Length: 81
Image: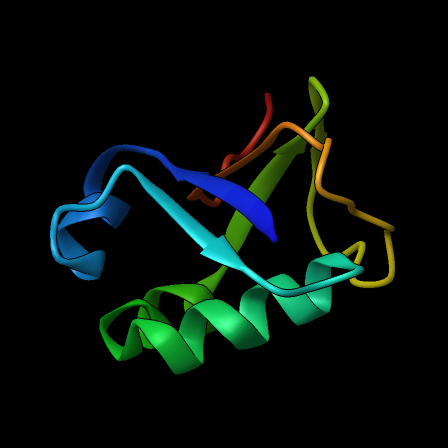
């Protein structure tokens, strides 16, 4: 199981949970599982989210591999400047 830390306002959309576990091998599967387990996250995920995977921020990198040892944080979409 992949442990996903939900950042900030995303926690309230998953019944206040900070950490959720999903069965996934890539980021797309993580999102699909999060939407299935926590339907309140679906609209926010569809608007856009970013991942920090082992300290690197990803957006739209759906097939990036994850495993049980990955440090994974889901956060609202971050824009750079």
